Image (cartoon, rainbow, N blue to C red):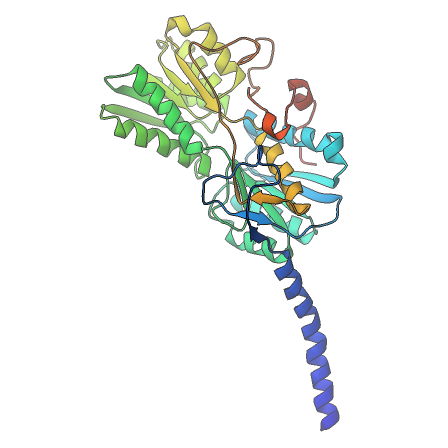
Length: 379
């Protein structure tokens, strides 16, 4: 009987030892909440006064980092993937990377979650993600935390404090665009709002900023909403249909695909009107060319280079440096009459290039050639 009891205890111990090691490894992988500032305070600015600062256990490099992108069918996302590859290829960054993997999964949220799970299972050190939905990632966030994999979300961020979020004030962009329309339409009027990809945090936040600001103005604004998916072709068709059915409009605001929106106005012979929009080079070229004709623009947004800030943050966290849990990036903004050729727009560059695609405080600056030399494909 004594031998049986000892054998049973031995089996329990054998089972418990790996579980204990896993538990201890999990606990050790969690970040400590520490005092700020961040290791790179000029770049990694905390989102708010009460943002927590984190310090993850230091890992020895080089690191395996993955980009789990969702939607790819617009120029911002394509440029973002190209920018990520360009940043990872820079010699000082490449020296810290054993592997950099990119996967784009489309608008299928479960497919994006599955991709992140695959990276966790494959033992990646960190995953950078542009999330298709801010609230659907709970289980995979928990898995990443248990496995000691650092998650850094940017642009479309994650609704959790168990990941690091990197973003601009997306709602604030909506406020900027709405304020521009209020300034130029003091008596209110009919507004066309061209939205982005439904269900994403960026689309929701920008939309809320626009409507809350217009509503608070006390002016009567009638808003027609269409979906442009931040894509020139989709936005152009949606705008053409809206002009045909509900036009003409007194003002326009668009989250992306703005070059296509202006082209639809030209094709329909719609009068140029005040426009609050994003930072596409083609849009800004139109704004500069047709300002005297009534296309009074405010162009605000953030370049796809925020993915580079996310990768930089992931590496810093893996190195055991102090980072904010939520990082606030500056907004690129220029408004009529201040569009300057060679600075705010580039006549010889592609219409699809997003201007302001750098963060000098982070040491992140790209030429168009560096970015466009990269592919948009998975790797």
